[in-house]
Image (cartoon, rainbow, N blue to C red; front, side, top):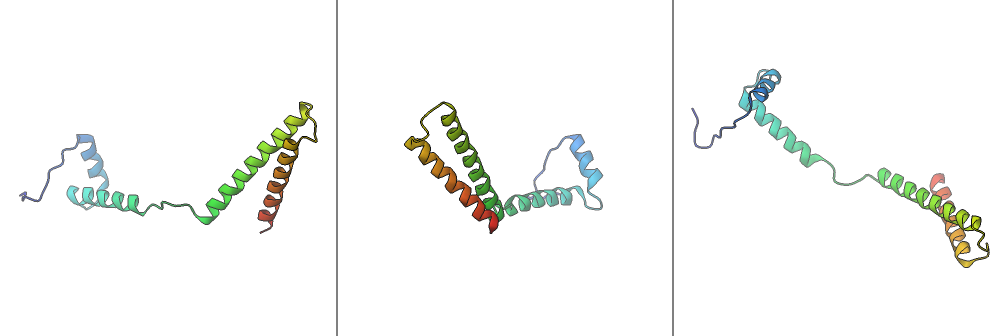
Length: 109
């Protein structure tokens, strides 16, 4: 019999068939309770941060992306026939070199 603390869950017939097919020797109530507890434990145990390796890989990929963009803009500016002595192009060139040096240093370590 049910007491005051028990609740009734209404589920479709196909769900009951799946429960029965997978519950083994547990009764339906035990199996459903197990599934709920397992799912809640999984949700709360998931990490909410990235590892050091994941972060380093991300920063390296972002640096490579910036490097590619800078290469494109420098070569695009030169292809348009702008004066290669332009301060903007020289500044981009220096920035490009600094990214390249940082990439080489990170690969060595």
